[in-house]
Length: 542
Ligand code: G16
Image (cartoon, rainbow, N blue to C red; front, side, top):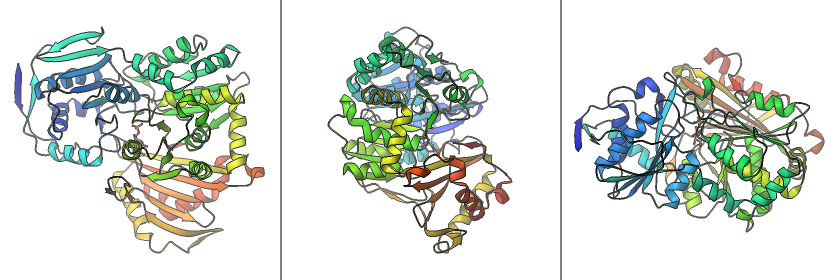
């Protein structure tokens, strides 16, 4: 039976870079999740009898909210819900299901790379019928609705079992519990040369994949071990756990340290990779060499034609503004379009839908293509493996040859986490105040060429997104970028992105932090990071 339940608004349900992310206890407040889900439905039109995809990364509170979302979908008039077995769907797999089955949209429960558990993070985001994160127009409408909501609709049916695939019903709505891996693995087989990768692996090529006790475990087991023949045990930490084993499921050099150490060791496998909580990010490490995410997108774009799904070439490349310019040089060489967007995968959606770009990437370990409308961790792993199988060279050889051909963009991101919000906002305001006077200023050898607050005009729908990050560009092409994260859940996270372009191949083997040392010092001088935040060094360097 459908119930209409009175509720009162919460003032803090503004979606960030990727949906609403809060601590679990906040989500457990009375009607908190219900308010947000109803606000999503209230902001959409025309979903009567249509399909809604629901799934999550298996983190703590996933199962509870999935039951709520299913009962609310039934009460709001959806015709069918597709949900992954056990409530599990990686973000790219959810995007694929939405597209493949012509769903109206999807609700993805995840806080991505943020930790999980009773006092850790949870999140809800809405994806539209193209399979991609809702546009700012929709997220703004959702937020506006959360501020005035006074009731929500829900069926009072009992919970349904999510553990066995099959068709069930909630009120009159059909619920299809589906295998979370099958459709996704089938899609990957259409894009990549599985037999070639399998042959390479059978000839002794060793792979190590760290699923970080998060959602990609079942996907990686099926694809890498079962279908591609990687040795049993190649996929580590493959059981999705509600608290990710107490770790941050963030595939970077801090949280995936064990993999990094293995890959730098004497008996390293040939290829190492990891993915995050919801399976959309990737970390790529070759034997003895870490590939920065910015370099990875450039190298994948330069070599994508070697995989069957991209043999016809690329329409264009897009990267987020803070991502290094390495991909720009590839686009220039290929003679294809290059687009610079604000941080957030949602900004790639229009470009992909319009067929203007094929590959997109972000410095935050996200790479993907037009096959879905999310970034896709395993996709990046498989494209690398396909390229390695065809080129028959090591990751290190591919990377160093790429630098020799295109030049190297030394690149690093310094994160200052859980900074006092007022201090962080003050720091950004102070930077904004300096924008007009910075050009022409000298800091040692570095001369500021331009300084601005990045604004983006979407070339497809002409929507404008302002205040997307402070950019300070120096003569010669180096730059520092400052922005506040839109995905953190406590205090503010200041991100500082530092980049230097080095065309000279004899200078391509410097230590990254040393190669960027003068820019790092100038970033602190201009932004007064230490003075304003009290931090002597970043929490995380990637
Ligand atoms: C999300 C977005 C990405 C973005 C990242 C970092 O990733 O989907 O597009 O680059 O956040 O955002 P921020 O710098 O604002 O923290 P994910 O993997 O968290 O969904």
